[in-house]
Image 1 (cartoon, rainbow, N blue to C red):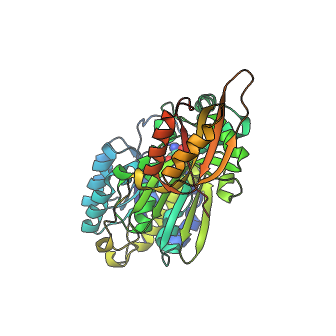
Image 2 (cartoon, protein in one colour):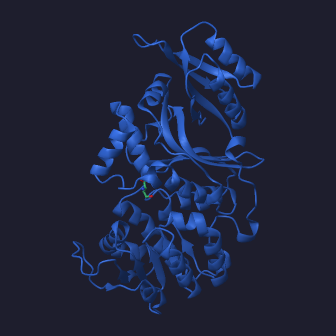
Image 3 (spheres, rainbow, N blue to C red):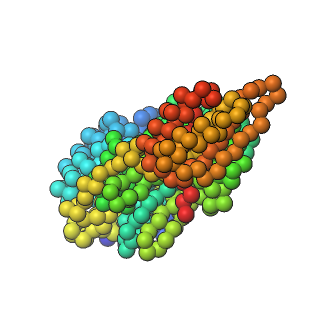
Length: 436
Ligand code: HSE
């Protein structure tokens, strides 16, 4: 059989990992795919840059469109990232009848509907295992391994940078700003860390998981996104004292009357396996009605870990080349004409439990005032913890854990509590999930 010829857009971290994994495991991969998979052409920002890996047999070119249009390329592998130039390149590859493998979560979360429709029309595959959780094969798991199940919910640690920062804050009692600065110095966090720390990267990934889990279009614009930049080490410490850890979770749930799609810091019981996922690692908990809860863990980023997913897609595409398009695994797990327009719930319609931290004057009647507000709004208290006032202070921290409640009721309660004369300043709210 003639080899499959791959054109690689981008020779950065993931691109170089892909070259190296394909070369090192060339024989094994060919035995699995049924034919050799060769990268024959690649683009790079700087063609003259010295590289410490073997580029033998790979023609380096500057012009991405020229690579995409090359009739000798069978699969275009897009590893540039971002959604500016890549959208046109991917659509151009599709229009020219080429299959596409991409690690680009931002592109698919924002333009997936258009891209998958174009791929369907052109009868080509767009594979994107590397777009979510790096080397963890969660897309394949959801689309194939769990296909018998009605997925109830997914909760994932899908941003390694944020998880690293939260892990360090908890283990050392360090502040967010201190750990972020260290992470940037070590190269774990970008110079502009916004996408990672504000939950945007996680929301891109969650949008894709949600579409595949529930058979809905990709709708990044409807995801609720809240990052970790406002979390204090104090709340991480109090959470721990109550038996919880705070993680940046991507949560998507089919409630029966809509889909929850939200990324935010979340208290989860410290005894859960996923609560013990530390550092840059990723983990995704999937609850299916038949299988129950299943957990997937591994490296969510990095050169060869992500390349592992890219190469798996290259093998999948190679194996499926001869299958007629109607018999391939659908891009979003459900047959394209079976996608449903189930609404995404706005965050104020979401139901979850809450951690509330209030700064209260240490005088009689405070608790009565606060509990009356919660009772009036039908919010049930699960636990209360009052800390002793610091020496010379007349303000104490009061932590309340609530049972599950609709967010708009909690918003109303917080607004009323903040107006009480016995309360000083803003109420801190972190959502809480038992994940049971
Ligand atoms: N920046 C991401 C993370 C990896 O920190 O997990 C790529 O999606």
